[in-house]
Image (cartoon, rainbow, N blue to C red; front, side, top):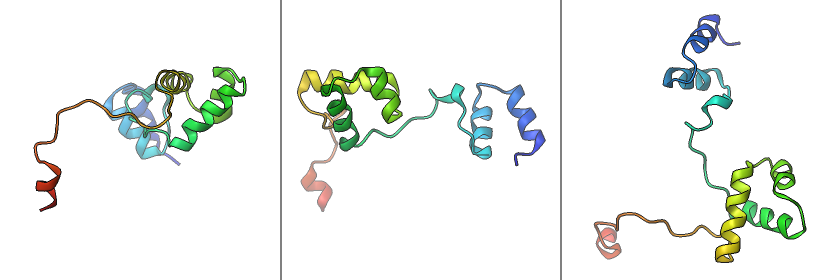
Length: 106
């Protein structure tokens, strides 16, 4: 049971960092805070399952509902699969490492 002062605080401070922290304290998933929380990337098996269902003729919405994954994620997985022919994680851009792998091992 969440204390009443916490619930009142959450109502007053909706869509703020404090609201987010209160939801975490209460163990709730707040739909308005979806954009704040960063999610883990899906496993290769899950991405393969998405492509498998797509090849079987299911639409984006049906795949989304069946696997409980957002529609935009389904679209992204299929788009990348069509473009690159793989569901593996692609290399990301970014600054090259300062240390070479050989130096890091020492």
